[in-house]
Image (cartoon, rainbow, N blue to C red; front, side, top):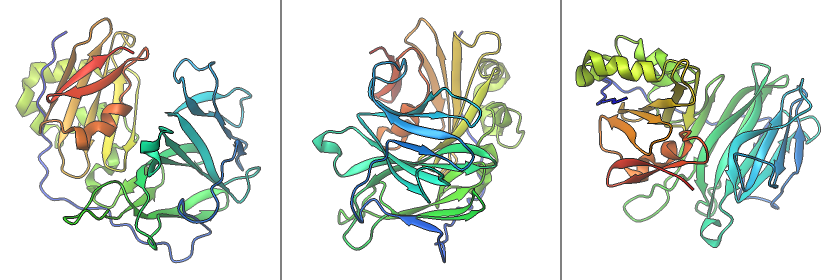
Length: 326
């Protein structure tokens, strides 16, 4: 199947999501303050549970990983969190009856001692949600990263993460701080995220494909035939979420052909740029197109998160996506 795509979403105005500091948090936590903590397991107020494990039984992760079980199940399933080190750093109000837990992951080597990837696990609309926050570096002294939460019963009401240092620097080389705001049913959103894209978070790629306004640039760039081919490749079961509070990653496979064809539509919540990726089993070819060239410094995170299947992974070389086998 040959698929050709160049995308465009025709953004007219940008409306950033502005994070507001919590006036009085029920629970606050900072990775830079106090004694380092690692918790083996956390049971939540709704009966769900998470654990940090390291063994060879997982088919998806050869390293440390976070596993979870629902309130009605006795078996644990792998989550997407997998790295050399995966620690549950905090649980509130306790590890036996938690409303929220904070998880960090990093490569474990000396190069990783200054940063980790952070996730927040909480109860949202009665379900356990694992929400990716993003990469956080150790910031300037006296300006620690702070996770703040308020609750209504056992459910999250509001959460703001302030002084999050994602690696961007100013002209003098100082790390610059950003904020993340939690939106119920969506996840943590960067304060530069264009709010018009919030409606796509948690939706199937078809929500983009059927949107007559948002798809205009895509249809104009690809033509009707190629648009239909991409739409068909993403016509089966799917899911979506936020990556680093910036990208909306909407993945799906082909209806009645899920094991052979799958891919994603990706929206850049800062700029309005869009990308489409289609992969096929038994080939290393990747069909990928977008409104701007791929940038490893910017796009690496969503590329890493895109499901490649069977232990394979995607890499970027000379502006092209490559499908690699371990």
